[in-house]
Length: 292
Image (cartoon, rainbow, N blue to C red; front, top):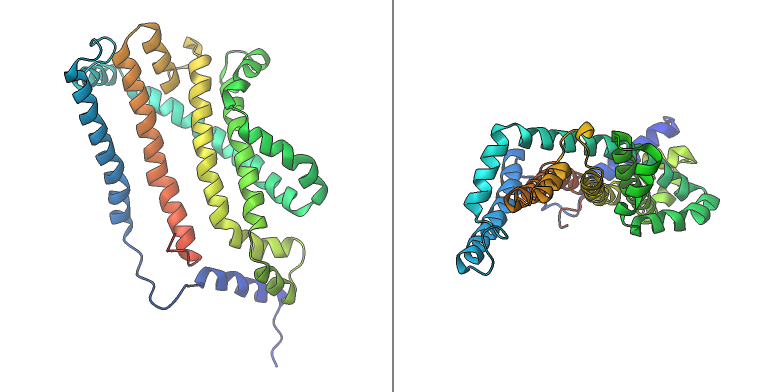
């Protein structure tokens, strides 16, 4: 009888998790192009309805135009700011800041969540602290960041990281805790111990919950970034979407304020629809969770 290596058995278990299906009748996965088109079309339709409702309010004349400008006025502001290069510059600055802060948060939160799941002392000591940091509004970190780092990009990155990494750590911990006990029993029966159990059984099984935690963490990091950019607005920091919104408020330019809010929403929806939604569907499909 052939003798197999324990590592090969564990790899087979991991491959089995990937191939797990809910039944023989699972429909084929839609094409990526179609999924992307649907992901973009639905938010665009919602925005169109919002604009139509907005125009009705303006036409009814509840408030003067300098308080609630018409959509066409905001469009003219958009074309003006786009011609000046402010729109593309603000989006690029905010997206680069958000992406860097988010990836640093992943590098901190993921191993922290795994350590808390594996070491009981860390779970008891750090678990409540991480949970409380999740509920703490990220804007509260802005005064501390300004006093400690000064008005420079480090202050903004600090606020973003403090807003995101607790959700990543908490999401990883919750995802590991929700791993079916049967999978752990199978892993132990095949010789998985310690890090091998996490590598081949627990982490693959926890991926759907972990990705859900990443989506929540991105939302927190994006909100944290906007709060930091608005409050730490400074010419030396460059123009981000938060600074663009702050400039509109300083100039009492409601069209620029509304434009900034819309840009923040559009970028947030685009990242959710084009990055996290396809990632979540892919992970869930591989785990046989197509019904979700």
